[in-house]
Length: 110
Image (cartoon, rainbow, N blue to C red):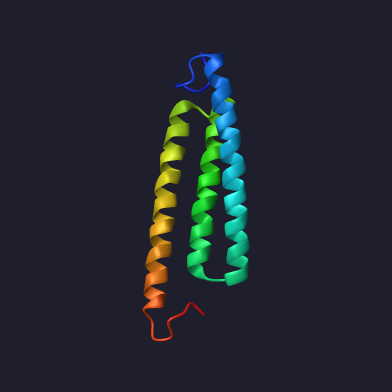
């Protein structure tokens, strides 16, 4: 039996490894870019977006750990869905914070 419940054969494992590798690369680039923008802008909304993208990267790490057998299937699913909730909450918080600050008399986040 394979470490991941939905990978039934070695033939299915290779496409998953390729997909996870591309996801890891893409989410690492996005997270790095978001952190660079946060360091330049220094605002809370940019930090929240960077953290949301870091949660996306963490989700790929969890999937990779599950594929290699480091995480059990049930732990994998709980962590991935938990990271989905964290990611959505961070994006909503970023939008809410940006809207509440833009409605202030100064109109900016400084």
